[in-house]
Image (cartoon, rainbow, N blue to C red; front, side, top):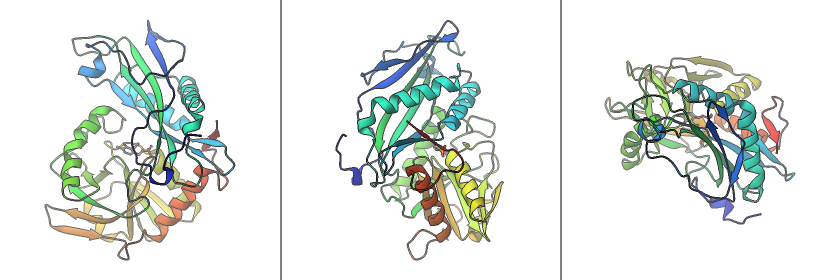
Length: 338
Ligand SMILES: Cc1ncc(COP(=O)(O)O)c(C=O)c1O
C-alpha cells in the first residue's frame, strides 16, 4: 500500500497509477481502455471547451477494518450522471459501463485506497465531456468518459468541526430553470466568485439563496443544506439544487432514529428557529455549521454555542461513516465490495 501522511490528507489531487476511458463515436460507446497518462489529447473545437458540455460525479471508496474495499452508492451516481448528460444533451453513459469503469479504476489503484482509521478515502471522479468538434452551438457527436481516482482527506480542513458560512445574494450558482439540478461544470464556475468572497472574509463557504426570489435556502457551497428542530430533519426542495446522494442517506438515517423528515422550501428567516444546521455531501460528509452571517441584513444565526457539533448531527455523522467503513451493517445495500 502507498504510504502518505493519511491523518493529514488534504482534499486535493494526488497522482494514482491508472485511469479508465471510453469513447463514444458513431452513435455508440466503445471498449473501456486503461491509461496511465494523466493527460487527454483533445480537439481544440471540442464542445466541452466552448459550450460547457461537461458533467462529472464524485463518490468514494473506503477500506474497512477487514481490509475490504467498499464503494458507496455508485448506482445513484450513475443515475445522476445520466440525468446530467440528458440535461445538457450529451450521450449518456449506460449504468453498466459506469459501474465497470468505477470498479476497474478502484481495483487498478487498490494501493492508493487509504487504510482504515484515518478518516481518509479514495475519491472517485467520473467525467463526461463533449469531445467532438463543433463551432455552432450544438451538441457534440463524440464524447469521452473518464474515471480517475485520488486519495483524499476531509473537504474542510476542520474535519467534523463546525464551520462559518456567509449568505450570498450577489451571485447565483444556477438560474431558476437552469442547470443547478445537474452536476455540470458551469454551475461550479459560477460559484467561484462567491466562494472567493466568502473565503476572503474568513468563511468556509457561501450559502446560496433561491435564484428567483432570494427568500429560500438553496445550497451551502458544493453541498446540500439541512436544519434540525423539534425532532425533525428539514432540507430544502428546489429546482436549482443538486440532488445529493448523501442527503438521501441522511434522510433515511434520520427516519431510522425516529426523526420526521421534511423536504420542502426553507425560508432564510427559518434559520433562527433551527437547533442545529449543517451541510452534507460526499466530500463534506456532514459538516456542522456554527455561524451563518447575512451581510445584507446584518443578521447572525449561531449554533453549536459550546463549539461542538450538535447531538443529532453527530449521531447521523457517526452512523453514516460507520456504514461506509463497514463498522455497522448496511441494511439498505448502499455498499458494494470491490
Ligand atoms: C452543488 C452540490 N450540491 C450537493 C452536493 C452533494 O451531493 P452528494 O451527496 O451526492 O455528493 C455536491 C457534491 O457532490 C455538490 O457539488
